[in-house]
Image (cartoon, rainbow, N blue to C red; front, side):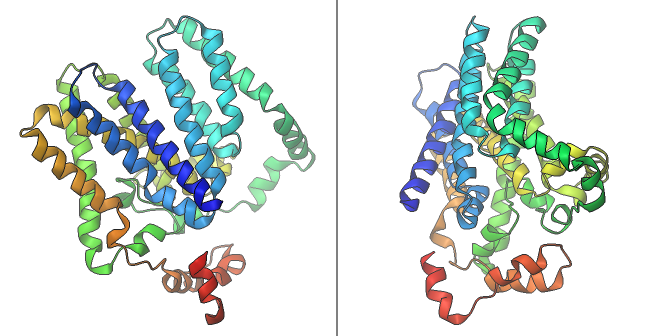
Length: 364
């Protein structure tokens, strides 16, 4: 059952991502216009963060991943409607699904507000009205869990306790490097990295960074051109850069600023693990892959060779055929021995198990 659900989540996520990117593509009846959306969906469904969720057993994250893509589709379709209330109701209903995890619920609200304010060709009054209606209605629909949670937090003086007891070890020891975050490679554990054969690791990471270079070139071409979806690629690239800074935590390019925000803005303490930032970062990167690949095909010739090259490089980053099958249990165990993170005692035995259990682990 679990395997069937995982397959359903992956196919649904990839399909919805492809459909969303196709909505953003130029309205041209050309076969190659389907290539970009296909590649964006492929990256999203087989990305490192999705792999990390599967290995970590975070099925609720896979569920909200699909729901977030449904949210983006409704947001894009809603931009062409006159009815604000209908769009607000549809968005709020999707948030019932997204609220399976509080982190993605908050990120979803943030993306919704940014999407409406920056991408909708409406008056500022209509934009604010949609954001306000969506926020109020989604919170009302979440009242069945939100009110008890808030009441419980008020009883324990959560703000003071966070200041006294909160630690941010994960934002120092377990964040991805900048070079990894640039191609949306990261999780709270480096499962995806450890799966790569050591001899191929440098080449693999170089190809991943090449995908970032493709996006950077596409953004540059976008600024100089007048294609219909210019605002989308710039919008998603802006969010992509924002989420990179949070995903790389206190050691990122703006680590000092990120640390200041965490220490002085209590609600950010909810996102104490880089995995929460990797999901929106992966969404941004997958969308940029789809839009960038479609854009480059318009500029480069021959189209068939360009498409074949881009697809091979993407598959090399994602496809499991070259993986070693080693989740890095020994490496993670040695790394845990050397760390002083607060979760060391709680999680250490997960990486060191008796030999008798090896068969059970392989099955799991």
